[in-house]
Structures are given as structure tokens and as C-alpha cells.
Image (cartoon, rainbow, N blue to C red; front, side, top):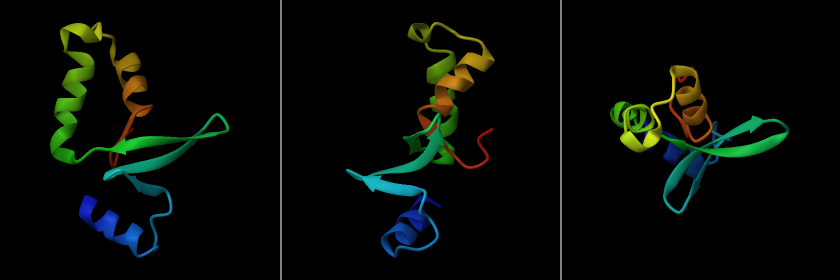
Length: 81
């Protein structure tokens, strides 16, 4: 799906809320009157990202709400809630 989005961006169609910078695909999000860039995460990497934020010894082992808040301010994947 990432390759499809990249191709659509290059063709200037449909995916205006995505950009590519330095080879990284970002989703543009609008929060608190600001535009932020969220790193697009392929589905196979989601468990690793979540584990790194929740289970890693240096992460502080925050609760679900805090972990989710940190994730959604840095990353994006489809159906992310």
C-alpha cells in the first residue's frame, strides 16, 4: 500500500495529505492549529513500534492512554484509532 500512495503522490492525485521527504512517507495531520508530519508505518512494523513504546525498559512502561498518545503524535497507519 505504501508504494501505491507514493505513486499517487508522484502523479499528484488523491493523496494530498501525504508527502515524501528524504525518502520517508509522511501523513499530514492538523492538530491545535498546526500541521504535523506523522511517519507512515507499514502494517508489519506496527507491533514493533508499539512494543518499543510500551515494553522497552527505557520507555517508562506508560499506560495504554499515554502510550497511544505518544504514538499518534509521531506515527500514522491506516485504521489507527
